[in-house]
Amino acid sequence: MPHSCWLSLVSALGLAAGAALAPAGAEDANLALDALVACSDETNPEYAADGQRAGWFWEAHWPAWLEVDLGRVCALSEVQVFLWWGNDKRHYRYAVETSCDRIAWTERVNERTNAAPSTSEGRRHAIAPAAARYVRLHVFSNSVNAAVHVREFEVYGRAPEAP
Ligand SMILES: [Ca+2]
Image (tube, rainbow, N blue to C red; front, side):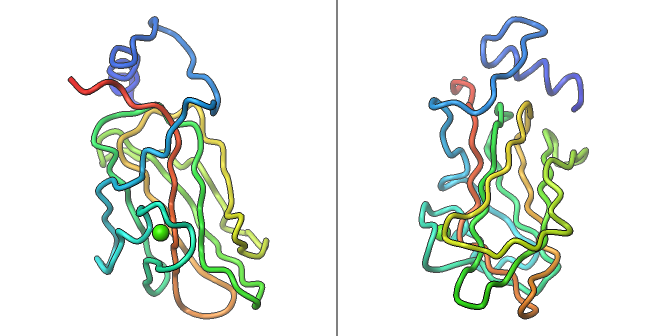
């Protein structure tokens, strides 16, 4: 990650210089909940960050992306992805990348060859240590049809205190 991004986070969280971020812990919150959400086609992306893991979803034709703006650089530990699930055992292929400035991106999750069926349990991916403000989910395909359905996208970590 960019050095300046890391230093600003260390300062904001009150960590000692050179400190390592802890892995996901009980104190970590879903920072994506009700955050500003954008997507590649601007159709109802807010359904992906409304706290409801089932029910309505953001829909698009793949490939498509959904991006959460956490508002400031945060210390991230994990993402959880809830896509459409049903009786058809469909699987989705996707990736997750993060950025501090929306210019330089770092890939954190690579599920381009995923074949595990989507379920109500969602899928969890540890990404610590990651300092980022923007978290983008790319969906490349699903095994049943040409649609992307993101029911919920959760980003866990710790946010610095508001200035
Ligand atoms: Ca939802």
